[in-house]
Image 1 (cartoon, rainbow, N blue to C red):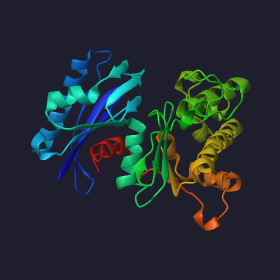
Image 2: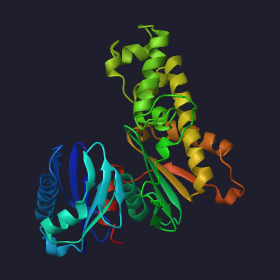
Image 3: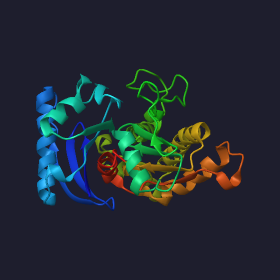
Image 4: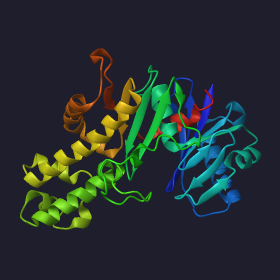
Length: 317
């Protein structure tokens, strides 16, 4: 048995063919052309999907459905993308139109939910009953698994944990609120914190400045961690603060859902135990957990960039 998963992003369309062991055996990738008409979007998706199938040596008749993970608010019942700002979608009937284009059942899900489901089926959340997956990127993506199923809420928008407030009247967020978790704990938030700290110190002989060749435009999510390892006090202060911000939001997630496992992914997690060890210590000291033997396990996501494809491919399960 083979499954077809599409990870639709604002930058790229990535498609994978997944076998019965949840392994990707063939892929295809194209740049996403947006904005575009509904027909043009379906053509982009279909052509990339057919390329992946050809690379796998199979046809559309060999897969039971087409699964898609896309940014935005998704009505899972109708397959309509109610709104997705990055893709310029509003009431986009993705399921209906793509089914007509590919003559195959189509299942549509939010991309963060699809990634969480991938981790649930084949990654760090496998074997759990209740779990969360948090992705630290430009923003904070999150997917919630309750009793083995993706939880979307009554209006299909549940799981936007990045838009819970951790700092009253704090940094302004693109969602319109102030102090959202993602403005502090996303990769974007970390970069902003690093730049702000560097501007306050403004010592261009400091290791943190030398790491970026004295150009704030070169600051990325690794800068503060690299500076900390180089003995720079500014880098250490930024990392300590970042772990506290990230931990604060994770504790909120744990206190709300009490999952068996909470996994975190995204490029920042390449720091490994440098990030995870102090984060576990923070969470252990702050989380509201009555039973020690049922404490939420905090770990790194396993599937990386493949989570969205695998999760989308397996949505029919």
